[in-house]
Image (tube, rainbow, N blue to C red; front, side, top):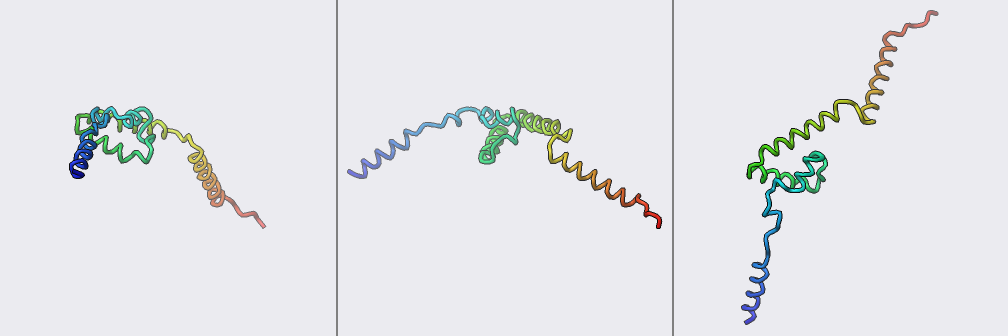
Length: 116
């Protein structure tokens, strides 16, 4: 009798599980892909990166190759536009150091010794 009750309870629990809504919809409509389209791939948190890669593969399999290509292309263009000019403090600092070293060594080479 116990075995029958355990069987009924376990089968009710296993069969009552519904499908997750994200499995029913297209993987190309996932919020991570929408985030990557709006703000770029670098905006995706590291903890979600593996899930993002899986979603990209599923989207490619379901016919979203053009959407994935456009995603990568827009990300490259966004990075190119940001990198065209030196806009951050680090690159400006590196440029100042480079120019300082250039002036220092040019002065060493071109300097004349004072006459005695």
